[in-house]
Length: 210
Image (cartoon, rainbow, N blue to C red; front, top):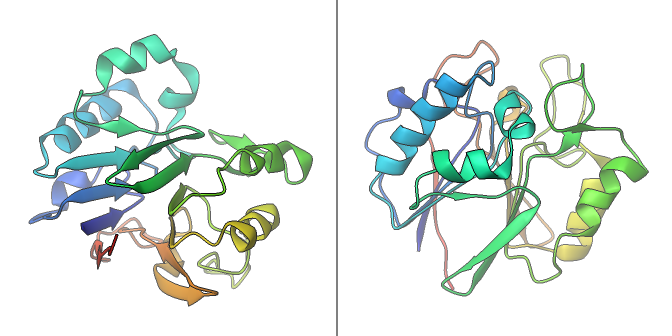
């Protein structure tokens, strides 16, 4: 299965061209300011992509997804698009789990305090997860800011060490884009924008063997 990974498009999704594959995964921050019009524009674009499966989660900029009811979201999200929010799905025997949660920072969307408050979100991730999608990175992997500080989640790192998913994809920290491998897991920071919100990083494409 050819999987395309993207994250942190922040409304610049129309600049992404020639996206091809079987499955596309967006790891959050689909909008800039979390407004409904931005969400509708993204969902229209995402729904029209030529993939068999299209999965996304929200991110800290995506206030709309945090504030509105599930009924409203069900009406807006195209039927061929899968939205995960502390939930999962199995596709061709690949178990995928997605969560928008990240450590608290300036009261953005889906912020949780470090420690017990955020840990309860990681505790519900199933043990058989093959691909984990979170908006924020685990501590020390793909989480280094322009100020050379690691800002990822320690509790998420501990959970991933136990789960050992084949792939853990995230974004949030634009400046640490790329792939790292550790203990059998491919960690992917799929942020397509740099720290100046310029579209400079290409989507990351992997062939997943079932």
